[in-house]
Image 1 (cartoon, rainbow, N blue to C red):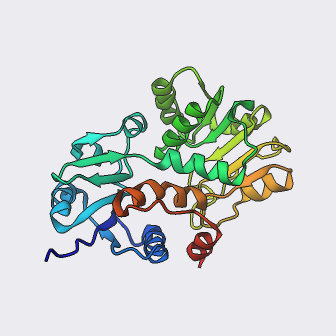
Image 2 (image 1 turned 180 degrees about the horizontal axis):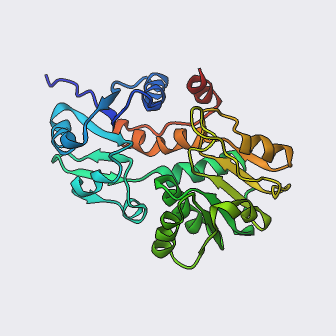
Length: 277
């Protein structure tokens, strides 16, 4: 009689105690009555490859990857998806039966699914998008918006060279705006995205002038602590459709869970409530 194999998955980072992913995946495992577990794994950069190569032998079906490992896993993985290659980072790993590691990036998928769920009328082709920030999250958002057909992307970052690097990589569709003029991006934009940590609990405030916000815009903030940021509050007061950042976290977890545990989970109000407790 063969033993039942109980699949494991986890999230790798340094630090890792802040991650909300275990709460989400454990909820899904309970909801769908599945055997398995999802655990936080504190892994130092020096040990990353050794840990990843050992995990398949320990019964892990895969893992999520968070700061600071999302770029480094790209060179360790045996196969990398086109999306992850384009974004330059991976957040989801699948361990094959032969122990090989497949790296993917589901951040752009999570971003788009969150907007489609909470702003179903959104038309990416209606006009330019304004993006604040030029880090890893911005890369995923740029790829997702470009794929969706956004005609032009205004990009502003506190340090201009990081924004210039993205323009050189992603091409003429990107227009750089100096940070001191960042509020001007709102004049023509129909989609507005904050990918910075500004406005997050414990971080500096988001001080960009927001008087350019107007009805009809879709405004989303990737910050989800607090759930309602100054950007979202002012956007709602201006008549915009607002989309908080929690949904991106929830939706980006869906493809990985499906691959590891064999069931495609739903992102619904009950899950949101669980995550907000």
